Length: 113
Image: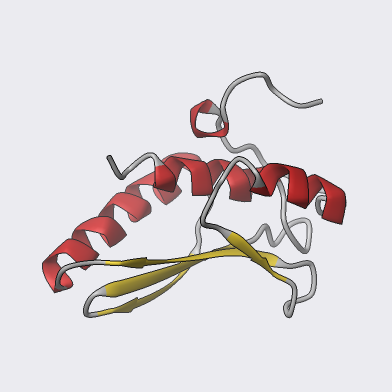
């Protein structure tokens, strides 16, 4: 059952069972423009890179993402450099992508004006 709430207003929950189907992922992907699904990893992962003016802005973003991850109890893999951060979300308990990954992606997108 899908909630009528926008993804950014939903909350992560512990997930078990199977990952989202390819069709389910593609439907969710329409709600988080700029994100892509990396299928080179078994089960897939949700990925997006963000570019910033400098290290200070990059770290401010990383800290905001850390707050979202802590609040939702769902944590991404991060690759951080001077002016870039790449986020990768997946749900280990289902072995691929779940609704949680798309919720967190939408919440990260809500950080920018």
